[in-house]
Structures are given as structure tokens and as C-alpha cells.
Figure 1: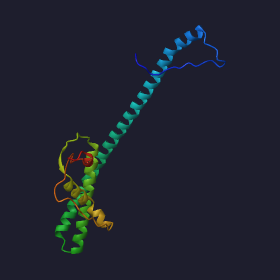
Figure 2 (figure 1 turned 90 degrees about the vertical axis):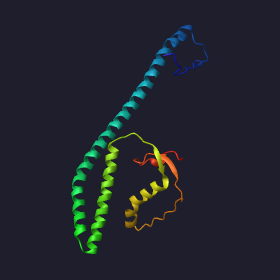
Figure 3 (figure 1 turned 180 degrees about the vertical axis):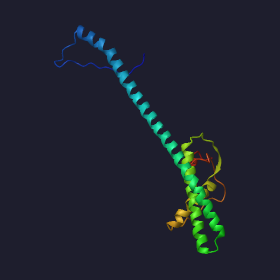
Length: 182
């Protein structure tokens, strides 16, 4: 294929004898065959790697489909539960019951967010970069974990810059912060 894939060095024989013309001719005949064998081995290795990546992509697609199906199946009864909790909360006069119902509603909201994440995982989309505010994104992220933090008796102290800190990223993606800061 007119490219270098290796170099063959032929050293002296065991008793420092010279190679005969016949032996050199034989080595010359074997060298192209050795090159072909090496090339085939490299191609085989590349093909195996491509096949491995293809299988992995197929597995990820299957996991995405499974996640989407599970998310849809969970979302339907969750909607009924949330509606019932909202109704009970609006009709309840007992403060303790209202507080418990409010907590249950917060948790159903968390479940909905998790399901939305599963659905977005199952639908690969193009990255749409836009101008984002880092402080605003951090506030939103902390709001998402605030309930869990309170439950674990963790106090979140926010100390951000007063002005907006701009960056470029995809606001729908959890990888927004891996984008380039402006």
C-alpha cells in the first residue's frame, strides 16, 4: 500500500557467518508477506475496536429506550398521585397534614425531574450553545438539591459574585459547565 509499517533488521548469524545469496533472496521473498501479515493484524485490531464501539453504542441505545419506557410508565401514576396530593392539600385545615402533603408534593416534583432527566438521556440531541449566567445556573442547581440537603441537616451558604458571570453552554444539558467560560 506504499506506506511503511515496519522495518526488518537482519543481524549476523550465530557464528558470525554471512548470509548466502539464496538466504538473502528467501528473506527478500518473505519480507512483503510479513508486511501483509502485519497490515492484516493491524486491520483486524481496528475492526475489533470498531465492533466493540458499535456494540457499546447499541447497548446505550437500548438502555435509553428502556429508560424512556420506564419514565413514561412511572409518570402516569405519578401524575394521579400528585393531583390527589394537591387536592388534599387544598382541602386540609390541619397544619401538620398540610406540611406533610407539601413535603410529599416536593418529592413528587423531584421524581418528575428525575424522569425528565431519564427522558432527555434517552433522546440524544444536538448541543445548542447559548449565553448563560453561571450564578443563575448555580442557584438553580442548589435549588434542586436544597430539599435533600435540609433532610441531611446540611446548611448551604451561597457566596456568589454580585454581577453575572457569563459562559457559553447548553442550558438543557448537565454538561453546561464544561463549556468555555467567556
